[in-house]
Length: 201
Image: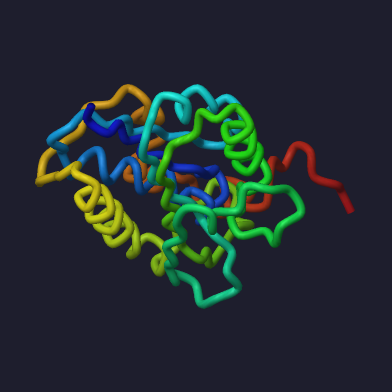
């Protein structure tokens, strides 16, 4: 039976570089096609709602913003048991708590992918509400996708230039170019949250 692969982007695109994982799956879907069925999913910050997807796949690629305490734009690849799946570990991914729960639950149920790789990028900015990826992080998106393609190819799922149809990405209005190009100026929109709920001096 052919291996079933899940390609998952984790993150919150509302907070600048936290959107790295989401932008990776968007880029992958628009630039690659595979010789076997794959599931390309914007997992956002859905946490345990992602569990059914893990149950249905043998291989999983996860893209995420990862706080390694390194220079912005630094990428690391973590595989298998090195991907933290228990509470109380040093926080690697900015969304680790929720996704740790997903992986831990999947393992308890013995329904997790057999092989997992986390492709993470060190963020530069996380406090810019409504902001896009910073240049050092945005520049790593194609490289991260290429790493994922090689990892999958090593496991029998080859790819070539093309597109991967998927209904599991964000609405087109939230895709990178539309989202970032349509952002109001700093004078028009608050950069640290919703101005309606911020304390007044």
